[in-house]
Image (tube, rainbow, N blue to C red; front, side, top):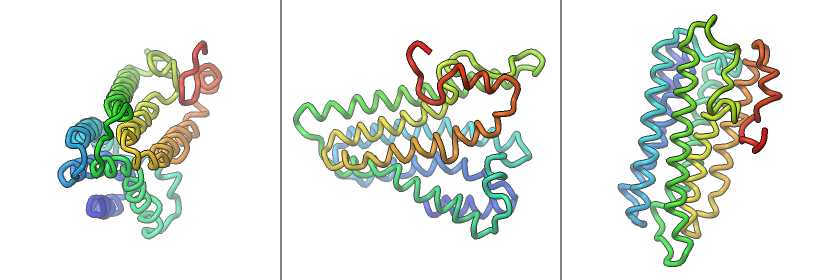
Length: 245
């Protein structure tokens, strides 16, 4: 993670594209998962299942991030606003160092699962349930991103002001919701071993990052003046779908 973040920081700062940081998030977590699977001494099926699902999730996310970076000549406004006036040292600390530490903490359940054995009792069933939740979250994120891409590719005169159909009619941020479920599932998979249950702050941190720190809230700040968006906020829940709404 240190090598990946450092190399990305050098390129990003030289090119004035601090948003390159997004492109190293998924690969960094996949590297932790694979390293944990290779070096771990815990249950082999669980540690390799985690590595496979996380790597597949990261590969899809990376394709999307690289496509966005290549097709845009401007930095993501989220970064421009967040880092306005900051020095190089401040950028390294606020973006790349913070992201490396976040990767380390978020992946804690995966690391601990790779070093733990599965119990013999019913608690071991949490492992397959967690893997299923991870897959469901990854599919939710992928479908939401595909729906958003299809919407964005339509001519502006031929599409509504706000995407409010499909998964975007159930949550204003279904892509971030799916991402959150992936890491909730990783924790559930790890928590089938008692020690890993103590890593519950890890998925809580991921949800906080996605909802408030770098994801949904910042997106809403940029979108709030778009025609129809305030009405959309009134009609559709912020993050978690609400039955009957």
